[in-house]
Length: 637
Image (cartoon, rainbow, N blue to C red; front, top):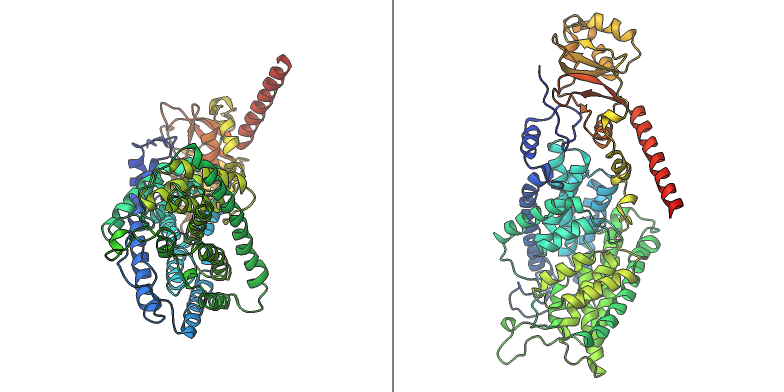
């Protein structure tokens, strides 16, 4: 029986593959571009589900806004560009303003802590944790619980955003599909990120921003998960296109024509960036300070704490209803001004409707409101509140500098746009995402230079704090990349250079009976046994663990078993031309200490066995030689 060699770009999987997984693997063999492979093939399907999830989430939120906030509280928020013209109304009666967020927090808390406690808080951190420490594993129920809990939290007025839950919808399906196809952990992580990219790109009408967000948010530095870029792009494209079938794709905000005046404007944007950095520091301190010092010490069950947070939010909203829900409409209406198509005859477009004091006040109170909602255990994201805070800061800053007779040529909306991007870049450590996403959400790319300045400068100023606690500094700090840097060294060595053992191997004939096999193994000191057919061709391997499992049922059928029945197929092998990177990865995934080495021209002809000890010895020798070369170079210099 001839065994096909395993392509070096496709790591073997433990256990027998499903027919679906095998088909995907064969198809991926023709598409072997680094970073694509099976994850690239599956990412469009993940994008479809993420796009449909974004449609469901948005429509459900609109229903809650209309029939809960509007119906029970008589609260109508100003619309964004996608909205319809309507009179703004503030919530009443007062007791309903407090009751509705309280009940929403109670239901959300029960859903989360009764069925999926890991869905607590803002879901992006849960996705980051699953990437770094969870092998890309997300329980199937988590996206469903997170979705409904977030819809209830935001739809009853909770101060939270949409990116956390929608990221978990997409990433949860990506993780599920990877498990269904029995993909290894590295490909499962990539599919999980692709799902998050699709969901975020669709819900915010920013496909490129969503693709960048998934790879950039993992790290608190400027590092990026480059292997996920192509699958994330594919997923975001399909998700956005799917979303557009049901919701007309338009920018979230409407902006007047904006332009960058040149070097003379940069000091003004630097001043705004310094303000955003200071408020960003306050945001993270209040957000986690409330969690650790206010809600965590409360002597009540965890599932009731979101209800307490909801009641606190309702009391705050009695005076400042602008802090409820996502709040994008308040940025449009209060800081930017309404576009012409939402105004009546004779009204001027893009005139801010909030005073400087109210803009700054809402920005600061939104920090407190978000702490009430999410730090208490409520479900939702932090992107939406961050955008509102940054936008309000930009609007208030514009009025401040104009009142001082400075920067009159700069549109107030320009400061709003730069404030949104610069603020989020600082608190999330995602400068590229912030630049692109804000540009896509506003439909304006004319302020790329000020945006770049604000995002880069705020990133540099705010290196010590972040809203995402699960971020790590660089890939070398991530458990997901443990061993990658060792593997880079191992890739310089070939299997044939590592001391392949060809003597003392206990080769087992495929037709050997079970009783004789036991006698042969009992006299042997080996742990891995190659099985060959009558012509000497390798047909499989088995280990002592496989033999122990077979012994459990040997009383009833042991006489019918031959060695060939114990052999694992397909055989995971390496050739003498493969690098030690490939050998180590395959041994690790199968949890074996030796792996068969076969002829590159004839994968059924066994040459010998490669052990971990030989691999480690070769690695140590290479490290010593590299250090010797480095020392010699230092001496010569």
